[in-house]
View (cartoon, rainbow, N blue to C red):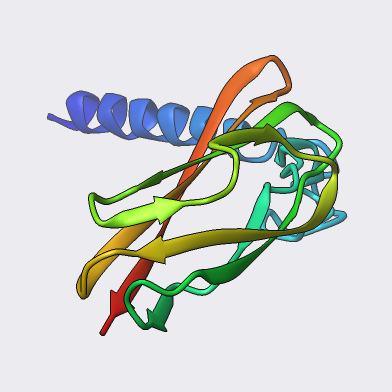
Length: 146
């Protein structure tokens, strides 16, 4: 019985000591704690800046009158071939070109008219290439007409 107990204790000590070595084998061990930002800086992947598109989320207008909504955007350098296109619900007429290319940053006035009262939508779609990968962003503008 003593031999089994002694063997079990030696086996347990060997297993825990081998696990302990794995936990202490990190680079800079003892210099920083494991959750310190400098100890983990080699593990972080840098976050690239996002394509930014700002506009009013909801616009209240009168029916059958031309209106505009200002759209501002900024496109980081790692995006290429950025194009914007617009799609609208049934009772919205867009006066601008349906699609055009974007520069790195700027403002754009989208001109439209609601032909019927009620709630309508304009969808703003941006297509670009982000570091050789296709990128698509869609945002919605709610149009409420009287």
